[in-house]
Length: 115
Ligand code: DGP
Image (cartoon, rainbow, N blue to C red; front, top):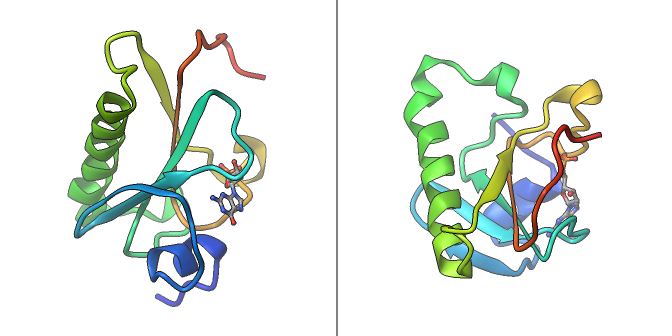
């Protein structure tokens, strides 16, 4: 699948990002427009546009994204205090970049429900 999104370019190292974690499957970098003291995006290297486009073959990869988010939460020092992980899907979910990503938000108490 081709991927011309900004996140595809970040995953391929074609444009810079403040990368906080990476492995064979995932890259995590700081969001340009942070909504919390720490706001990191975890993306798969393999392009998947939305959660709707993920299939059974992606199950392990999606699990890896959340494990990477937990690793970053520990690295950032708020794993015990708590944090939130979110995937926005399509227009009503507020998705603006069509390369699947997990938002990791932490460093302050977060309200529920979100807007
Ligand atoms: P979403 O709305 O769920 O698709 O989230 C997209 C997020 O991506 C949004 O919080 C802002 C962030 N973002 C957009 N462009 C860039 C970029 O070029 N670099 C970084 N680091 N973050 C970006």
